[in-house]
Length: 317
Ligand code: ADP
Image (spheres, rainbow, N blue to C red):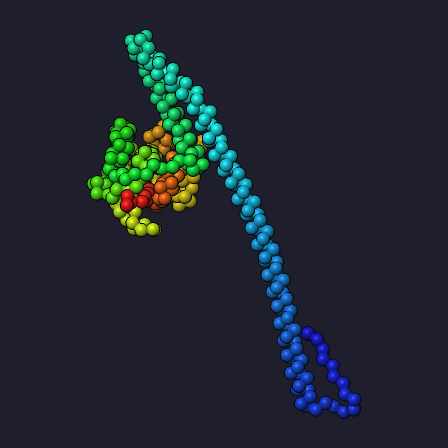
């Protein structure tokens, strides 16, 4: 019941049919109007409640984002401080090792010479890791400005190939440079940085492809999001990458799988690194206004679906 409509008259007697009809029509209209007003009020209140809930959620999300940003900054600060702290003693060790290596008593002692080479190799690897840490820190603080010039990919990729000839042989891997690389368009890039970015992608292809596999590198001009670009593709026959990891692997320190199973070695199968390689590659590509991503049908260490890393870089003109 919405309400009641009462009518009275001065003279005795019943209302006529028309009066009753008019009154009931008015009553129906009035109850509809009242019902609409109530619904409108409910809706308004519901909207206000929703708005309050959304505001609350936005507030919570903002707090979570700033907390994550703070944690990320802590991570970056740690990388930077650790790299600087490690670099100084490392330089001292390398300097003295270099002196010891050429010391006369060592020249006639094969065992000591071998031990010295081992130590030097270890310090070189440590140096590479410290440099990667510094690269990440520089890329994050955007102090790394690429020195842009016109370069062709062939020589850069051949240099990378040359660096890994021994490792590829030891692991019976084939690294193929597609003939199309020679006809790939010239790009506008910092050759040293571009070599570093590609090196990180190639060394991963080596690390995550079991012995006997193949890594194929090709490049050509394609249509990008903002006009023509040069696309470089590094395709391997390795263990592949799950969808859930395809974006995260470009974050610093992100590694797929358990950290406890982490093994060391720059080109060993599934040899872990510090988890900085792809963050460096992505940072360099971004500094060139380029794009990097990977495609894979998933992670499977038996079926070996492989992965392909794509890099888009601007053309020379
Ligand atoms: P890391 O130092 O561990 O190699 P990266 O940043 O270079 O760090 O790579 C992050 C992770 O991405 C690797 O630990 C690996 O799990 C995954 N990954 C990178 N490249 C490949 C690849 N070609 N095939 C399979 N997994 C890969």
